[in-house]
Structure formats: structure tokens, C-alpha cells
Amino acid sequence: MKFSAFARKPRDYSVDEAEELKKKMAIKAEPFQPKKEYSRIEFDPNIRHRMDSMDNTLIYRALEYKEPHALPESMYCAVQYEGKTWHLFNAGRMPLGRIARMAADFLRGKNKPNYVHNKMGEHGDYCVVVNATKQHMTGRKA
Image (tube, rainbow, N blue to C red; front, side, top):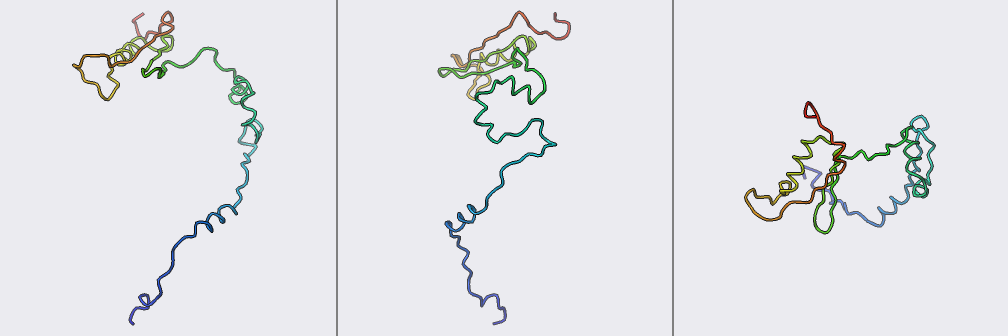
């Protein structure tokens, strides 16, 4: 035969799953140890068990070196309740025009994929605006 590659026996490439699992289990990964120069606080491997008992302000202060804000910083929140979506706007943190445009779109249902511009009916969601007395306006509108 001219080519010896054709005369070889076919190789068996089948994989024994039990043997592969034994190999994976034999490799023991080292536990995570962060370098001291990269961590701000001492690493505790049992931190997941103690997180529920810790106060969030203590955790925030330890990670950021400052106190958390007392007021919520979010401008907008969407919540699903009884099959409808409720959109909550914080007017103290968002410009007037942006709230008006977003609320109009949500009320008409323009954010949904099944929106048709001339279709009658209730397709929109509910919108709630809080902190309206602390309304934020940009430019010379005030």
C-alpha cells in the first residue's frame, strides 16, 4: 500500500463518562484567598452566613468609607402587581419634561410590542408620581 495512514486501525474516541467524572472530582480547587493589597476589609470565608444579621449601613460604610444616603436615589421604578405594571416616578430627582414624556408613553401603552396607534381600549399601565412639590426643572422653565 502506498499510504500507510489508510492501513491503520480506526481509533476509539469514545469517552467514558464515569472515568471523566472521577478525574474532575480528583482535582481539588484551592479556596479563594484574596490578596491583602487588593482588599479593603479582611476577608471572611463565612460571610454569607453572617450577612443577614448585619446592618446594611455597616456593610455600606465598610465598603465605601461613607454613610449611605437617607433618601432614595432612584428616579423611576416599575412594579408588576395583579397583571398590571405600575410605574413610579420620583419627581424630586427627574426633570419635568422627561417625566411627562415617559408617563404619556406608559399611559398610552407605546412601550408594548402590541401597540397600535389608532386602537381604542385600555392598553397602558398605571403611573404614579411622588415628591411633586420638589419638582426638578432645567433651564429657565422655573
